[in-house]
Image (cartoon, rainbow, N blue to C red):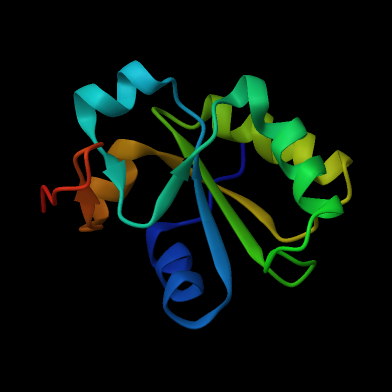
Length: 116
């Protein structure tokens, strides 16, 4: 399993067009929170979501970095591989939610209030 380091993910977030995707189940987000500015797309919906993006008029293009995480990095690895097979090249697994917290990343409650 290949996981992008916190520092490398932070550089992408700070300097590149990006999308952060949480592939956990909603109950997990309610319990632990979500990374600031991340969107929630459960693993079961990831392929359909991005296929629909390709056919719609959005700011997501081939240069957009897609950073995916879950609880420990396994589901995010599956999602990363699925999107690469669909032709997305700038897709990276940033591991588990705890990796982000331990790196000092900002998270918020699922209802949008900040935790840290």
